[in-house]
Amino acid sequence: MAESKKMYLNMGPHHPATHGVLRIELELDGETIVNATPRIGYLHRGIEKLAENRNYQQIIPLTDRLDYASASANNMGYCVAVENLMGIEVPKRAQYLRVIMAELARIMGHHLWIGTHALDIGAMSVVFYAFRDREMIMDINEEIAGYRLTPTFFRIGGVAHDATPKFIEMVRDFVKWFPKGLDGYHKLLTENKIWTTRTMDIGTISAEEAVNYGFTGPSLRGSGVAYDLRKAFPYSSYDDFDFQIPVGDKGDVYDRYLVRMEEFSQSLKIIDQAIENLPEGPVTVDNPWISNPELDEVQKDISALIRRFMIHVKGPVAPEAEVYHAVEGAKGELGFYLVGDGSEHPFRLKIRSPCFYLASALPRLMIGHMVADAIAIIGSIDVVLGEIDR
Image (cartoon, rainbow, N blue to C red; front, side, top):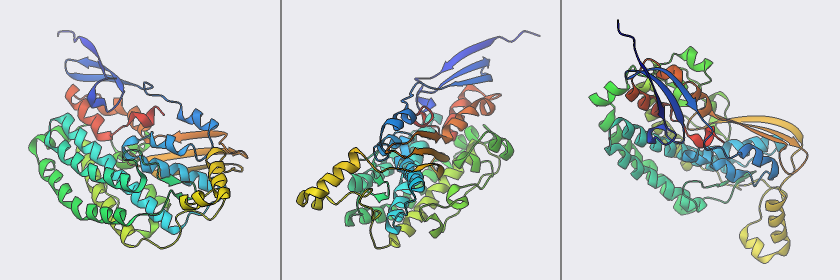
C-alpha cells in the first residue's frame, strides 16, 4: 500500500471565503482535511484596553466595530451592562426603539451572511438580492442615526433621540416588503439540488458537542438546542413580544442555514409588533448627569451647553461593582463583563465573543471533509473577525 503524502496549505488570512483576516493551517491528504488549525489576531485593535481610558459614553462607538455587520446589537449589550452597573431604568419607548434597531441589525447581519455564504458555494445571484434588501436597512439607520453601517444610536439611559415619522414609515415599508424578498431567497436556494448537496451532512455537530464547545446563537440552535437569551433571560422588553426559536435537527451546514432563514421571519415579527405598539413617553432616563439636553435647549441655554459638554467629556460615574450582561447577537451570546471603580471609566471591560468559540470548533467541523467543504463550513458558522480580534 502506497504511503500517503501530506500537504500543508494556508487558507487565509487574505482568502475571501474566510470572512475576514482568519488564517487556517490545513493539513491535507489529497483533498481530504486531516487537521486544521485556526490562527487569529490579525485584526486586533485592543478595544478592551482602550475602554479603560475612556468614559462610559465614549466607549459606545467602539462596540459598533465588534460585529460591524450588525452593530446595534453590540450597542445594546454594552449599554444594558452599564445601566445594570449604575442601576438605571430605561424608559419603555427607548426599550422598544432599541429592540427595533437590534432586530434590524440582526437581519442586516444575516443579509451579509446569506449573500456571502451563497457566493462562496457558487450561487452568485443571491448576494445581489440580499444586498438590495440590506440597503433598505442601511437607509433606515441613516434616517434615525445619520450613519449607515455603524449607527451608534444607543446611549446610556436610552437612545440618542426620538424616532422620526419618516423612520416609522420606512420600518413599516420594510416589514411589508421583506417577506417577498425572503421568499426569493428560498426559491433560489432551499430546494436547489446543488445547494442541498453542498450543505447537507457537512460540518455536522451534535447538541452535546455544540454546548461543550461553547456554541451559542444560530449555530447552537442548528444542532437542536432551543437556547436564545431573548427568551431565557429577557432584556429590553423582549418578553413583551411573541416570537419563536427556530431549531435544527442534525446540526449540519444546511440546518444552520434553515435556522437563520427562519430567524429572518421571527425578527421581522418582533419589529412589526414593536413599531405598531410603540409606547409614548421619553426616550432617555430623566437624569441630568446621564442624559443629554436637547440640541434646541443647548443653543439657547449656556448651562445646557456646559452640561452636554461635561457628559461627553467627563461622563457619568459608576459605583465600585461588577456586572455581566449578555444579549442575543446575530452570531450568538455577546456578553460584556464590566468592573466599576467609582470613576468615570471602567476598571475592566471583558467582552465574550460568540465568534471566538465558533472559530475554535473549526477543526472539529472540518476534519474528514474536503477542502471545498471547508468554505461551506466557515460560512455556516458566520464568524466576524472584528469581534474575535477585538
